[in-house]
Amino acid sequence: MHSLSFKVLGDFNARSRMNLPGRGSFCVPEMEVGAMRCFGRHRAFGRTCRIVACASERNGDGGGGKQSQSSSTSPSRSFLSRSETYALLKQQLEVAAKSEDYEEAARIRDSLKLFEEEEPVLRLRRLMKEAISSERFEDAAKYRDELNEIAPHCLLKCASDATTLGIRVQVRSVYIEGRSQPSKNHYFFAYRIRITNNSDRPIQLLRRHWIITDANGRTENVWGVGVIGEQPVILPRTGFEYSSACPLSTANGRMEGDFEMKYIDRVGEQSFNVAIAPFSLSILGDSSDAF
Image (cartoon, rainbow, N blue to C red; front, side):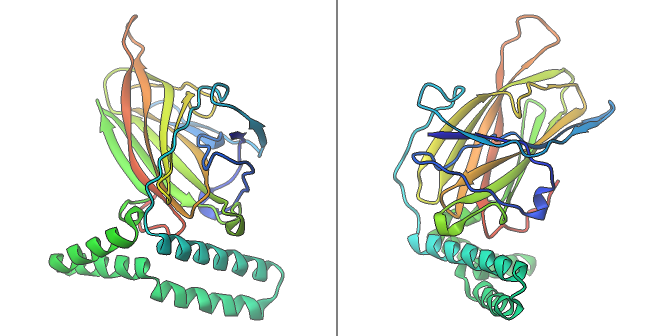
């Protein structure tokens, strides 16, 4: 199994990509990406770094506490194939535009537009949104059930929000086109996490645990110390933000997990887990708002 550690300077909404070599592992999360930011009553600060990337071999015992397990449940193969086609078209459009082959770029653009109009998942999402806005809830339920049948991952938003013991964890994921290679089944997703301490006590983030599932139903559990090389202390009514990334071998997937934390204002406090609610990794994205 391979691990990849790097820091990236840039805005994930600008969409960039990366290729992950390796076999046996379809995702390596918590890859030390981007900027860390604390906010709240106390003075905020940020830190950004250039890309510093390296891949290293690891076995079950040597991945910095990371372990994996697999399962074989498989959702709709047809949706997976369509997602891969969509990703390839978008990559071809980018290549044509960069090489100034504008006739080809226009052709691919029109193909993408037609694809987006006819793609069942995008069409059902649009119909469900329209049904909800016009309060046709029976129709919305029908579209939801159809979506669940052909693409279960698509009912999950690319954002999540959960609160445990007054500690709120918000997540937003985005597909990074420029660092993916659909033709090689390499899809790169970035996500930003905001942790807000709404309790009256200071806390420290000790460890992270992720459960990552790809579109074939294969699952990996990953554990690690802290986040982006830090074990941040978060004071009451303040927060902490960081960005990281997850390469995947399929065009869709999901992540969820928890942070192990402890109160630090008293000696001998027991640690506790703070939930990270499930969120989607999808090349199709959704209408979830960034925080």
